[in-house]
Image (tube, one colour):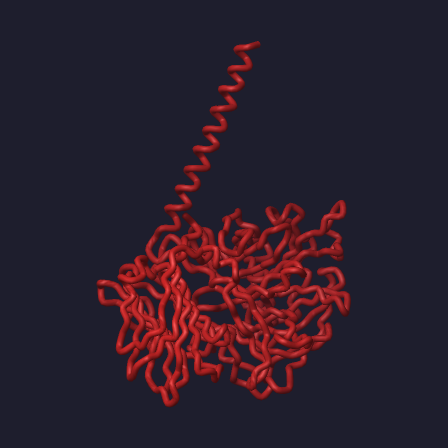
Length: 533
């Protein structure tokens, strides 16, 4: 008996050792996978292969779920699956197995997911609410045969915290209404007042709203947008949610509509509309209607690399935030950017707020507060005058490759110069982001940032964005992550997101002033930690 017990202990110890060894090997494999050139270190990206639109985001049982358009067999777009990752803090992500695979009805295109708290769908068991995803089926066989009804909407559910999904056996729940080429990207929301599920669908050049009591039997409610807003490309990936207007008790509804192409700096981008929604119709606010006549948009992000952005559902009421994330690329060049093992990443998650300004209702974007946990060493900038340049490389003591900057500048009367931040390397490559006082515009200039050869559309000129604030103090909140920059200016009133591909990491940083002196009121620079190490 004693020998048997010793043998069992030995076997148990060996199994534990093997398990720990396997976990260690898995950790090392993941670490190696997140160390390639240009790989972001605090943005989510898949371990390998292709990624585009974020999909199906919801919060449940302490986890933020992020699904995304994924092709597991190549680093270029192909038959779409739903990739899957979860996070407890919106910063550190755990990769999970693929959630949804293509089937006989087609590829699994973009969509959304939510917690069916009241079990209206009937998928729940033993008092457990089901998690329900709604997505677009894209039937390539029909498409190639010339049948324009190749996009339909299906649903799937999960009862194990989103780890496995069962597709509804009566899919599609929302068939193609007949010959409609582009009807996709369903965003589902529970509308409490009308006691129904509402799905927002992108339909070519407009939005359609459909309602259902159970996520299965859908009835068309209304349409919006054919003669208003930017129409430089097809409408895609919509979202609809209420926000309380800052410093008021007023609630407005925000409708996000992604568009490709037709963005403010060409290519893919996200526009939005503000108004009221009664469970059937979305009515644009009369003041905002003047800002978005046919052909003109109001933009969530003015850079070239924030597309298909939507928000998480089911955040706890005590949290109270509306959190947004986008795809950090652009269809003008997404398939050919110079990465191979993986391709493309997500933007930083942002908290959205709604403010009423002189020009009307405007979305305000701020990086989520959880990102502050990634801060390491810091460097304080004192009030100073910048004449031509202020080199910070040696003063910082850490590389700007992974950094966060909070800068405040004072704009003297009649200021006409440009100022901002420049990253560079020993190869003579550089990236500049800053403000042009004469034009009252922010700019992101990657025209000398490294590899531009893969696409003439990548950096033909600097991207620009308007400044909305009239304050003399100009605030720039910046995040640099290996091969990307995100600017939240004037408290998030103007936002720009752009990627770049230097031949070697930028390791030099300076503040610059062109065409005059710049007054730096102060600032702080933080080194940021990798989420994968």
